[in-house]
Length: 286
Length: 353
Image (cartoon, rainbow over all chains, first blue to last red; front, side, top):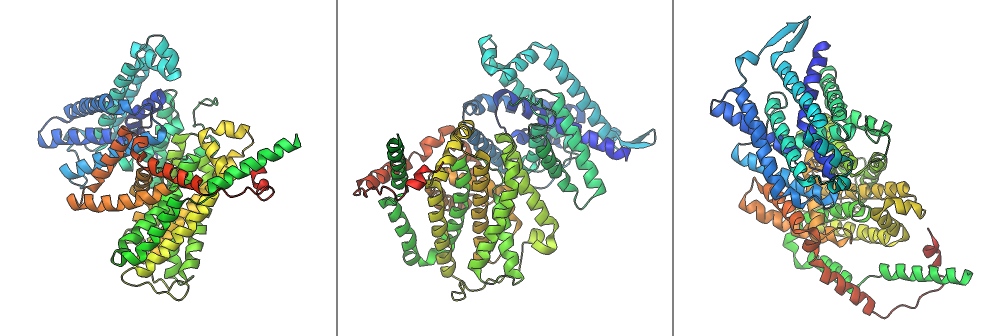
């Protein structure tokens, strides 16, 4: 029981790291980036290549996944995304689905369609017993890393200059612009960090979520649910939503193996019926 | 005062009738479509496929082009209709295809009706999530209940009876094509009637600005539920047609790729004037063949590239090529001698709000 809770929290935190970049792009630019999962996949495959084939230590592989995904994100943001911000939601959806399809086919072409796993170091394998609960070391590490990242994000958002500029821009883009905040630059920076975090999440999650070319499509619904339930006004709300979803999904798959996959859809529908504006969102219309 | 209102309403009624009039290019379009029955008898298999895509895209056009609802999971209704038709035929519940088609379409419409309440809630983002989620949910269900649907192997052993009890489906797809084309035409005429009616105009108003539409007295939610239900029914008929003409139904009908492809089909042809899906289906099918010839496995890459390019270049510019045709259509439509406006005949229609 507690093990399931533990696994669910690890899973949820992973989802949060994967999805938080998306909630920022959405809140800031009102931009629907369905290709977010593609950055996660990129990070995952880069880490996999470096660790499995180049013999890089696992931790370094994670760092590399973050920075390479961030670099790809920054590059695409400046060259492609920037042209799409002011277009209609339909255009944004078409554009990002197009990117997803290209990413899926490109990975399929270069790496092949089979599922792949990162070799994790021996020190992270196995379980440890804490107060009678069996905890996988790897999941413990995920919780630790994601916890630190969440704290850092929260601190950065509340204390740093970029953070306050970002919050100002999310609240009211026009006024922020009028105050001399370079919203475009803030956004490029945030987009890169968000993509980097997705890449890190992809690398971390390769063990749990699996890594194959359809990754961006498979997890698109999870990201959308996290963002919709959590809303885009803060970091804590998507965080709570991720944890909730993670626990629900893991528990569902454990207790009802046959119907476990339906739990997330049920959560989605129930939340929509009860709180269409998001689970933690203030009641004011956005 | 009363006189002024009267003349207004007749004017509106006149405008509506003018909008609803069939133009010469439209008639030509359908003449060409029906001519293919005799001109291209050896292409009927591929033409049937095009007709099914066209009908599916037409159903998406009803909600996207006329009500502004973006759906990432329109395949849900397509697949549902496909399985419904498959089950009806396989278990011999309804052997006659036309009746089975109607029942499958109605079943999809019922599904559309119930999911529409979820779609109504929230913003574009929520709609994306809900439509995608519903399609994934159905796909998962179809996969789980494999004793009913055949699961990943698809539904086998479907036998379709002769259309109207007389016309058997043949190996070359002649019956299938004529049957599908007639279904498409009938449903197109109905869709045309719907979008040119005051109801269709109110949808356009909702699409432009739902708050304003509500302010002038349009029951926004009820209209959206209605059109979403209709569109779901259309998609279900398209799926059922696929099952009946191929005697096979599979999970692919519910896949996300199908939802994305139908978006692409509609976008190529241009949304919001009904012919977009039809024209898009023709282009899509041939582009598909051509791309699959170059890279059989990775044609999805080219689909993605086309989507990205369409957005970067601008949809208006891409579908702009249809504008001269449409303008010509308008001119030809107006060029015909104007029918004398009946005073009382359609004023009731114009007066509806």
